[in-house]
Amino acid sequence: MAGAKIPEPRQTLDPEMVAHWLARHPDFFEGREGLLQQLKVPHPETRGATSLLERLVHDLRGRAETAEWRLETLLESARHNEAQYRRIRELVLALLETESNDDLGQALARELSERFQTPSVALWCPSSLSDGENTPPQAPRQVLDSAAETRLSALLDGRASRCSRLSVTDWKRLLPHTKVPEKAGSCALTRLTLGEPLGYLVLASPDLDHFRASLDTLFTEYLGEVVSRLLVRHAPPPHDTPRHA
Image (cartoon, rainbow, N blue to C red; front, side):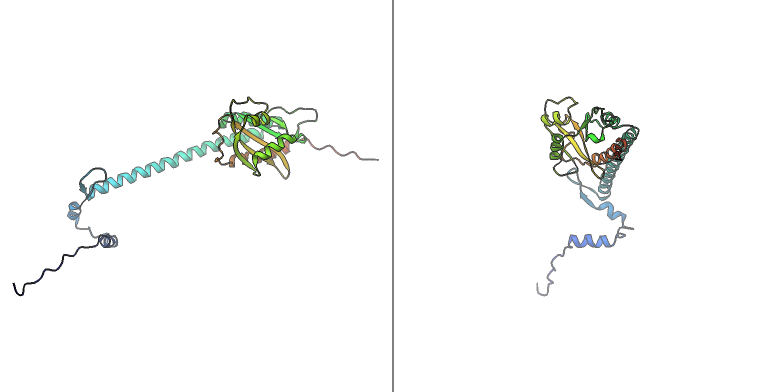
């Protein structure tokens, strides 16, 4: 028919533009609660649609469960850290009560076994740190010789502290006072120093994964610093050089 109007093409709104506009006008639905009830959105778990309010409740419940899980994880970590602090505190206090380097080595072995499930310990020190000239060292303290020095230095590989696998041969050499496992074990090593080299501390376990190479060595280094200071404190005083007439 002549003169008839041609219908204009149907225009659709860009979803991104709608989302952007709603984000800028969060009060749009105030007074339009009926519109909220009419909106339908996909259900996250089943086929079909659900109301927007039901979907919001579902999402909020999921967020609450996630927040609860994160809170429980933080609380569990806090409980673990508190227990670890108490074990370290009791260990250090027991070491401070020792009166000789032999006592120090035995306290180390006892406390680490009872509180940290570390069954084997060796404290390698030079003979100058012995409790007396004619007193042989008592296990787990060992007199550091050139062979042990060479092997321990090689295991550390230039580092101050390290976790590593320990072969049966190394176990026999570095922990001669302990039972040798049938297979290789694992160990945590730290160099003892306080202005000068004082020896090495070896913590060992027959469990290959007890001291994994990926483990942090902060605790071992801290323990080594405490032991180094106590070794020097317990060391006998140097003999006075005789004066010549």
